[in-house]
Image (cartoon, rainbow, N blue to C red; front, side, top):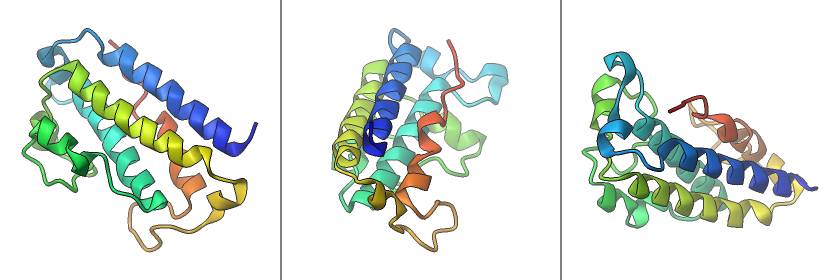
Length: 157
């Protein structure tokens, strides 16, 4: 198994968890914030997917799925470049979705795009520096995408 195979498998497993968490939930259930302040399932999945979309598009030198129609479908009152980083309670509350299918559809599109990209990577490609100087991001695709597969997974129904 190559590193590319491992990454593709990890992203596929995340897709399964996202569907398990969201499928069958109503918009109100997706937006529920336990204790009134915790992140909702909708926000967690949206944020996980936006970060993946943003980072992989940057590493691959491609456009983001979000900017290619998904932002308009969601209709969120956020800047198109927003990934959720640094969101406070108000921004978290603003991430409401019309359906679980919209949320998982965007996630599926990003995972498909991500898998196409990572399947073509050689181990040496994971050391290439991308996004150097960005105050938030890790610079190498292997480092940047290493933590992403586990991000946001510890939510439950």
